[in-house]
Amino acid sequence: MKASPEFRKQLEGYGLTTAEILYRMPDHPALLQSYIWQEYDLFPDFPELKRFLDFWTHGLDGPLFKVTVGHCQLVRPAQLAVIDAEFRLH
Image 1 (cartoon, rainbow, N blue to C red):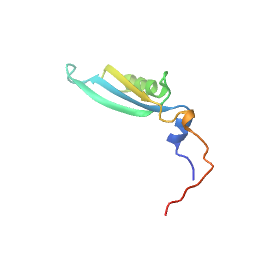
Image 2: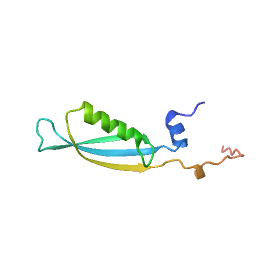
Image 3: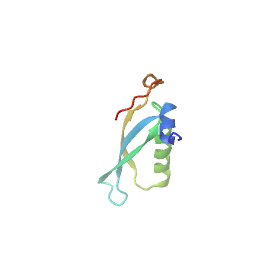
Image 4: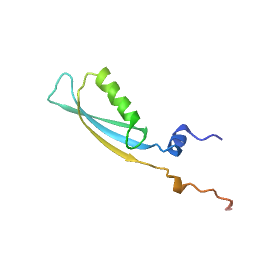
């Protein structure tokens, strides 16, 4: 059994990053629309989020208004421990 790519990223220091992106509607610039983006990313540089926002600014019509970022490192090195026992319940 192989570990999932997401778990491998967590072991490499990636954490779950959520960004709420507020952008102006292209046809109605007075209106704001919300978009939620979520991916595993590295704190504090956020290279994946920066890549996505770069794509947004160059490839999409809705100009960015505000980006709010939340980050949580789900797996920390101190939380991993080798267990040398097996317990069975009937």
